[in-house]
Image (tube, rainbow, N blue to C red; front, side, top):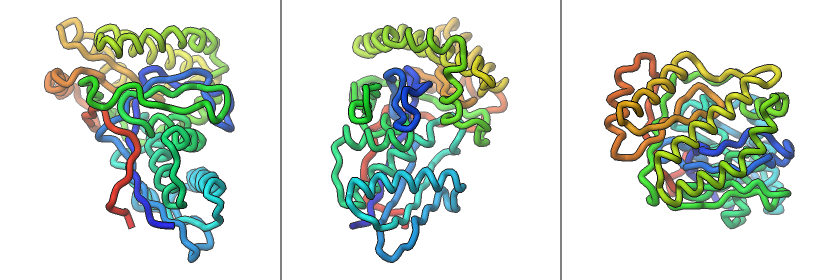
Length: 327
C-alpha cells in the first residue's frame, strides 16, 4: 500500500453519450467520441491505511456532500474488491475548474480516482480494465483514461464497454475554447438527465441515427476535414439538446448567453472564421477551432459581455501518475 496521485483530464464529447442501456453498470445505448482537454483536469491523491476506521474524502479544500461521499465510497469499494483488501482510504481531490457547469467534472474526477485508488491498493490495471472501472463511477470517465481523441465502445456487457485512443494528442491541431457563462453548479445533474432521456419523442430517432454519424465523423477525423467535422459536431449537439428539451419534465440547460455565443459562431463562419460549437449538459459553450485561429476567436469573444471564464485546451493525454501528492 502506498500513497498515489493521479491527474486526469476532462473530455468534450463530439458524438454524445445521452441515455443508458443499463443505468447500474452505466452502459450507454450508443458509442461516443471525445477529445481529452489539456487545461481542465482533476488531481487526486489516495492512501489506504490500517489507521482509518472510515473513508475520509476532501474535495477542493472542504468536505463533500453526502451523495458525493456515497458515490466515492462505493467506487473505493469496487477497488477494494479488486485488490482483495478491506482498508479504508484517505482521498484528497482538487479540480482546477468549477464543477457541475457542463465541463464533465465527474469524468476527470472518477478517472483520476480510479487510477490513483487502484495503484494505491496495489493493483496494476490495463488501460482497458481501468476504463471499465472508471465507467462504473461515471460513464464519461472511461473516456478520460486513454490519450487524445477517444472512442467509447458501447459494448454488450460491462467488460466490453470501454474506451480506447483513436489518435494521439499531437495528431490534429484541434483546440477547444471553453466559454463559461455561469460558474454555478447546474440544478439537474447529468445522471438525472440520462434517466429522463427516453421520455423524449425524439430519443429513438437520435439513437437510430448515431451509428451513421459515428462513421461519418471518424471519416472526417481520418481525413482531417475540419469543415465537415464541424458540421457533424453542431448537428449532434442540437440533436442531443432537442432530446433534453423535450424530455418529461423538459431540461433546458442553455442560457441566453449560450444562445448568443452559438449565433455569434455561425456569424463568424460567414465572415470566414471557421469555428464550431458543441455543448454538453450545461450552459457552457465549447468552441472547436484549429490552433491557427485561436487568437481570432478570442478577439471575437472579447466583444461579448457576460462571459465568466475562458479556458483554451489542446488535445491531451489521458489519466496518468504524478509524483507530487496533495497530502
